[in-house]
Length: 576
Image 1 (cartoon, helix red, strand yellow):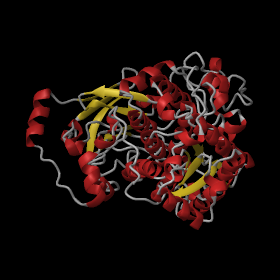
Image 2: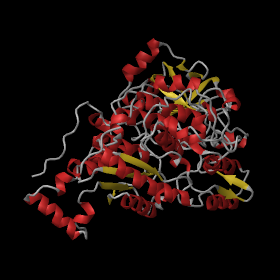
Image 3: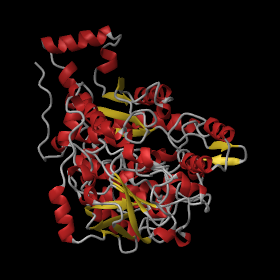
C-alpha cells in the first residue's frame, strides 16, 4: 500500500495552495461558487463525472446517485465537485453509441487532467459509458472508483417475465410471423422497461459492470445491485468515502491494473455468459493500461472457464435474480482456482479477500462449480480465411445444431440493401443459407453498430424458422441471441475477405474447432481482391473525419491510435 500523502502533496494544492496571483484567482473564483477555505484547504478534491441526461433512461436516476456520492465524500472529509460529461444513450443515439465511446473517453481524460482534482468517481451504466469512462480515467492517471448505475426492474407482460432486448427480438419475430397481435405488441412495449437503470439481462451493460468490479475498479458487490434498491444509494455513498481515502493514499488503478487483473475480467465475462461486446471494450481498456490482450487470450480462458450464471439471453433469469442469488462475489468465489486472487482492488483489499465469504443463495441462478451450465465460457473466438484477424460468436446463446454448419451465402452489401430485399418473396434463401452483411464495421458503417443480429426474412419466419447462421463485421446487442458471427476482422470496408464474399459461396462454421472458412480458393480470393475498390467516404469532416482516420479494427479494440498507451505519461498542465 502507498504512503499517505500530506495536504501539500495533493494535486489540487497546485491550484489552491501557492501564494501567487494565479492561485489567488482560483481561490477567489471558488469563493464565487459559494466555497471557502474550509471546503478545499487540506482536503482532497473529488470529481464526480456524471453522465446523466434526460434522454438516457439508463441514467435517469444519476442526479440522486451523484448526491449520495457527494454525501460519502463529505463524510470522509473531501470536497466533491460534480462535472457533467457526455451521456451515451444506447437507446437513442444513431448510428451507434460505439461511434462516440472514444469521444467520451477523450472528454473524461481531459476533464480530469485540466481541473484541480485529486481523485474521481465515475457514474456510468449504459453500455459504452462504462468502458469510455474507465479508458479516460486510466489515461488521466489518478485515483478513481466506478459507481455502476444498476439494472432496471424485471419486465412484465401478463404472466410473462420480460427481459430487455432479449424478449423484444423474440416477440418481434412472432409479430412478423403473425403469432401475436399488434395489441399484444403494444402491451409488451408498455411493460418491458418499467424503471430507470440499464438492461436487466446479461447484456453489454451488466457484462461491463461485472468486468469492472472484477478488475477491482468498483466496490465488492456493486455491479449487480438493482438501480431502484436503496442499497444502491448506500453503495454510492460508500464509494464516495472510499475515493477520499484512495486520494490520500494515491491508490491509483492505472498503477495496479496488470495482465493478471484483465485475465480475471475475462474469466468473469465467460462465467456470466457475457456480451460479445465485452471483448472489444476489454481490449481497449487494457490498451489504456499498456497491456495487450490478443483475441487468443479470450478463447484460451473461455475453454477452461465454466459458465455458472443462468441469465438471459443465454439462460433463464434476470439481474435482479442474480443479485439476490449472491451476485458477482458469489460467482467469483466458485472460480478462485482460475483467478489471480492476489490482485489489488479499489477498497485496498485483494480480489480474493473481497469474495472469500460470498455465498450462493440460489443455485438455480448461480450454479455451483460442479453443476455448471457448460464446461466452457459463453463466447468463442474464430479464425480462418474469412477472418484472418479473428471473429467472435456467442455460442452459448445459439442452438448447438449451428455449431457445425455449412451453407451458401446470401450477401447484402450494406444495411440499406438488407432492409430493401429482406422480405422479397423471391429472395433466394433457405434455412440452410448463411446471411452475410458487409459494410457494418468500424469504418464501413461507421462505428460498428449493433446490426449483427440480422432480422430473418418474413417467409422463413412464417415457415417456422427462428434462426439462420448470420455473419457480419458488425457487433450485436448483448441482449441478443442466435447464430450470429460478429466482429469479422479485417472488416469489409478496409478490404478484409468479407468484402469478397459472393452469393452462393459456401461458408463453413465449426465452433468446436474455432474455424470460419470461405470455400473459395486463394487464387480466386486474390482475383476478387484485385477487382475490389474501397468505398468512397460519405462524410469527411468533423468528429467523423477524426474517427475514420484513427479508429482501429475490432480485434484491436476500436480505440483511436493516438490515444494508445505509449509508456510516456502526459505531463501535468502548466499553471502560470
